[in-house]
Length: 413
Image: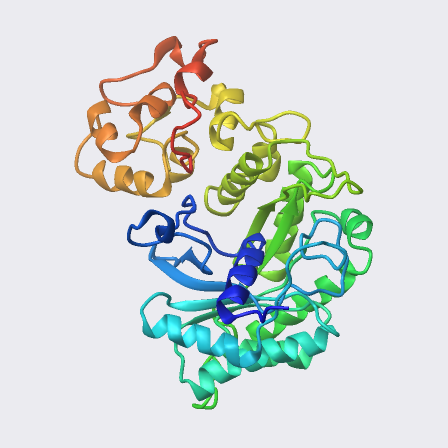
């Protein structure tokens, strides 16, 4: 049997890590210059891209420590009964890869997750040791995100927080019933208990001075979680309700939605009520509306039918089409909250409008310069020289403002 090389492990464990949705990939088609005698490849090399709050793109080495796992979660491609290639990095190999990639300016940080081997504590100990070696032995000052193991001992989670910039604990499913059915070995109470403990530790360490030999703060990037969407019959309302509870209870930085893709296994049949990737995209938009635009969950869900979001248009536009009595909004008089409800206006556009109208009364041409798509905005606003008249209430308005082609770039709103 041929020995598995480090490159082989990287190929297997970076590909296995694509199901962890705590950072964004480039979305590039796979290309291999070795077959075309060209330059450069986009084959699976373990590098993904995440985005900082200020908009900077950060390249991360995104890998699993191992895709061996003692659990047999039905929705997971790496479950114990799955027939997939397996590999396992040693602590030293992950440290070496991270440092070599970093020195070559390929990455700015590490995103590390893992299957469960032997026990939760055994796995967590090795992940903590990787982070410790990077920080203490290699003096690595880049970004580290660790996917922690929910039922690992609190002491190990606390150690992880001293070395990682962000920790995450997967909530897994939108409902406890769904988790019990598809991952009976996992206890939702353990997950919530770990998230609560992590929240308390983050708050405890805020502003507290630490030993200079250790990071000054405990998981300064906070905690996040991941939810699998489409593996059970949960509605979008169920998903957003769980997210709403998670943000409020655990002060999460992000809830990441991972579209479930059926795993080739004739013995397993799971429901797929909606196209998974588009549903994931709409949930991210809805999540954004709840966190930054002042929308209630009930308002967002009302734009669709039977607890599901409208997949054809973004949730803000869907809400606007069902609440036309709230429009048109006068761009020269409306407050920030009303302007944020106009389809096509993002937070930056609203900020520009509020700033510009202090100096002059806005015309439609002025608004066009301040937003991305005046065609989408026009039916919902009034300006000095513009009123939509009957356009706002016209029966064919959806056809006017909805995306025209399937190949059109997906916008946030």
